[in-house]
Structures are given as C-alpha cells and as structure tokens.
Length: 143
Ligand code: RB5
Image (cartoon, rainbow, N blue to C red; front, side, top):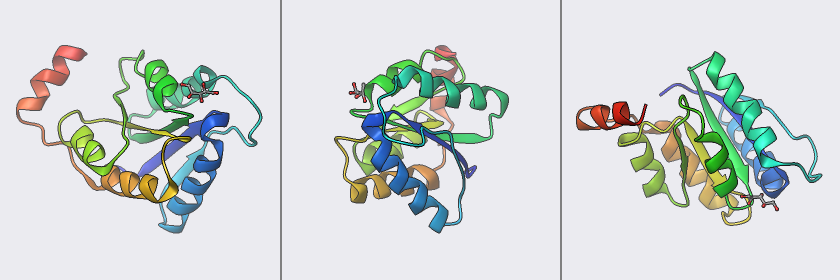
C-alpha cells in the first residue's frame, strides 16, 4: 500500500495526533502534519478540508484524521467523492475498511482510543491491501 501519509485533527484529537506522528516517523513513514500545531479549540471541518484538498491534488496519499470521537471528521470528509473515510475503533475494522472499502482515510477518535489501540489500528490499516473483486462494483455504485 502507498505509504505517504497526511494527518490532521481538531483539538479533540490533538494529543493523540502528536503521538501518532512520532510513532510513524520512528517507523520511517513519510508523514505530513497538516496541523493544528497546538491544542487550541478549532473547528473540525476546517482541518478536514485541508487534508481533503491535498488528497484531491494527490491521490497517492493516505489520510489520517482525528477529532474527539472521529464522527465529525468522518461526516465532513466523506462529503467529498474522492474520500473513503473509515472511522475505526479496532484492528478488525481497520482491516475490513481496507479489504472491502478501499478506505483512503483512517479516522480515529482522540478521546475514545488509547495510543496502544491506535498503533494497532494504524499498523493494520497501512499494511492491508484492497481485495478488489466483488468490492469494485460496490465502490463504483458509491462514486
Ligand atoms: C470537539 O469538542 C468535538 O465535538 C469534536 O472533536 C468531535 O468529537 C466532533 O465530532
């Protein structure tokens, strides 16, 4: 799977985002942190849109979005037809979101997910391939 990663969040996901960036840098991924740079209160659609716009210009990127629950970031990013964002709370959801849905954005709840769990989710998401086959026609029906 492509390994160039964009990451963004709101204040609800800020601290977990910082830890995820550190984790992925240690694993030698190319990761671009789109902010915010501090935990001040921001509006999640603004930071979703920054990542969504970058992915519109470069479909090779994988995105990671975080907010408090992950729900706001999921709703906002999935408004855009080039985004298939999956809110994952465990590694099985991460695996299936890649195998069946070809998810290109992983969404994590910053207030609902431990760092340990987030690491497992991310590892699976980044290492699982889309199964294609019967899933292709279903994705075509969405787009
Ligand atoms: C911010 O307080 C919170 O509403 C946001 O992070 C997110 O959980 C929204 O879905």
